[in-house]
Image 1 (spheres, rainbow, N blue to C red):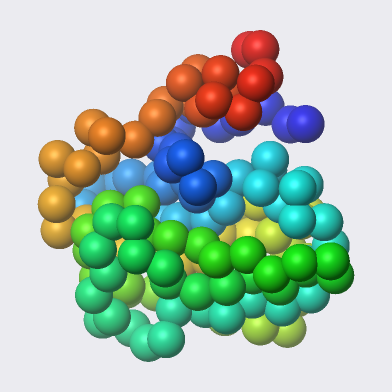
Image 2 (cartoon, rainbow, N blue to C red):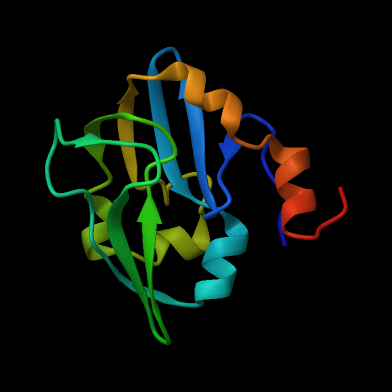
Length: 130
């Protein structure tokens, strides 16, 4: 298991969000990709400027053995999608905190960020000692 980056926040459904101003980059955690196994397909958010609410299903990730949903960590509007994942979904396995990001969003309710876990809390949540 790799180190959990401290520059982002985490959900109980294993998404991360890296906040820069009012923009958040979202992906799934290393723990989540490890649990899923080899990822073979991802359903990206349906379109740009698509509004999501915290906890809403945004898309699905298909692995060899299972299919999992991923969710919006906070309210916002999709501003970008990682189109590279269409041809190379295994980027999520190889680099979940870097090239394997899934989408970017304009955060419309920044107060919700306070409800997410920091790296230390997430490590405790998944049962890892830092």
